[in-house]
Image (cartoon, rainbow, N blue to C red; front, side, top):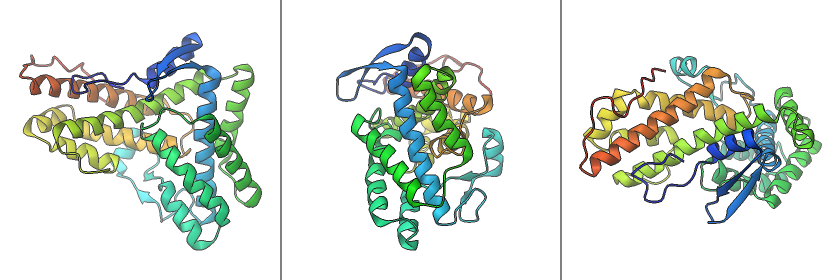
Length: 301
């Protein structure tokens, strides 16, 4: 996570640990439980495989209710923002909505939907940074549910997503393509860590109002005070963080498989600017002052 003066006990960054594993083959990582995990390429690839399986489940549910890319039922994203982030101009629907509609239309057996609903709670914990990774038993349950759904449905995930799952399986066996795959996983976790820091900053500012959607959260933080507004406007951080959230949405749901350079930059630079903003807010809160440009690095995304 971003190390800032706002956090009394900042958590280490899993995105950084993933990068270390990518380059050295292993890393020690402090889990939320206080235990230290010995991360390896295979362990990280197993986690990514579960993320992809969940995305595959979502895509099958979407197909089962007639929801395909470009469907009118999708929430259209701001066209300018989508061009800025270089992603399709829509937000993928949340898994909860897909489960509800599939149940309503009886397009997927109830027993499978019930299991998907259970797995969703765990997936959400990981994707919102409340849990670091999927556990061994959960990974097994995700894979079994994915395979069961494919057997019971005439629909399948996209060819690109299926190929990605096979690539991850192969990388677990012999390392083929592992570096690029872990780079993508690191980008996804960088986006997750940005959300965690937004939540922490909202709490510190005293404006946390329950579990707001991510994009609404950054608007709420910007409105916390005149200082917040000034810092966020200066670097156009709200816009850049919205773009970051849009890239993350497509990565989580498998509509983007491998982020291109632009998409990766959107995530990395939003994360960096957010860290600078939080550090500056913490300094000002404690009575410090900053020189002009001290917390800026010339980023102009």
